[in-house]
Image (cartoon, rainbow, N blue to C red; front, side, top):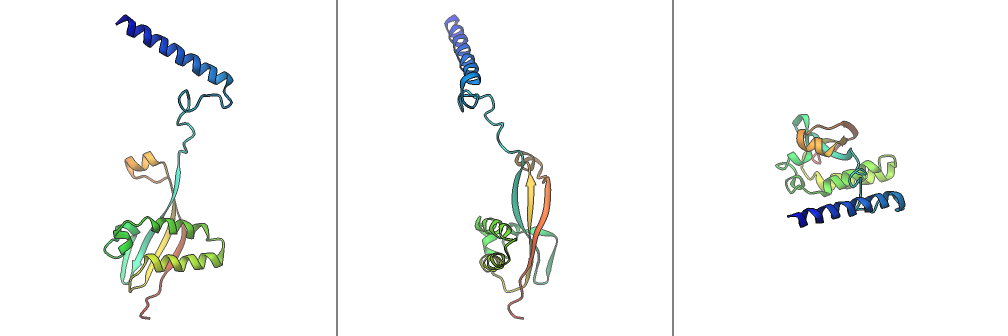
Length: 156
């Protein structure tokens, strides 16, 4: 048992010495990732993401607006939980200051993910959240409507 204690003591002393040497002599102040004081300190606190919220499909008005993925009975891509929806929404959001590109991406977005016979009103929302807090409580730090969109009923 004393040999185990002695080995553990030598191990911790060597580890501590390497830590101090890294702090003094390593280019970034540590030998990352093994001898690191701040392994997770560079992780961002908040994350930004987009949501697609549907306000109306035909005569059905959703109050409050529903997340696109909650309407699997209306949209096939929502039923499949297609990640392309949010990727396309991010591209659409990124192009909102370029009118020609925005109009083209909006038409592609609508044609790809809103394939129904009725008119639809939807909006794209930018959210900011702490991932752990959202996981535990569902709370979002910031919620902002970035753009609103409407499709026309093809029968009109």
